[in-house]
Length: 136
Ligand code: FE
Image (cartoon, rainbow, N blue to C red; front, top):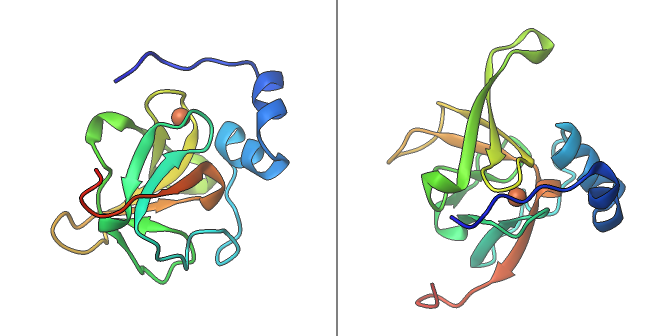
């Protein structure tokens, strides 16, 4: 993994939309069924909107019905970081970008095979790049 990316809030604000900043840098959550990628099925790679770290591919994306883009596995475990999140009276596992610390979403254990995991991500924390199959 490449070096960590560290920027000030002012630097992040200058390069992100207000919604991207609120979700990725302030641990916000976009409203369900409103993001760019929950109902998006192109083949390619999902990157951290903040630092470009490749996080997920369309190969592990599935329709969870929850209104957020959902994946059953990250591209590589080393590209994400997990942390216990006890906010809002719930115990959840937060998922972050391992390179820049961007808040991505949460991971739940109600996903499909082969992992049984549901990485419930915010579209606002992701960007997408098309890749032809065999390209990666
Ligand atoms: Fe990042």
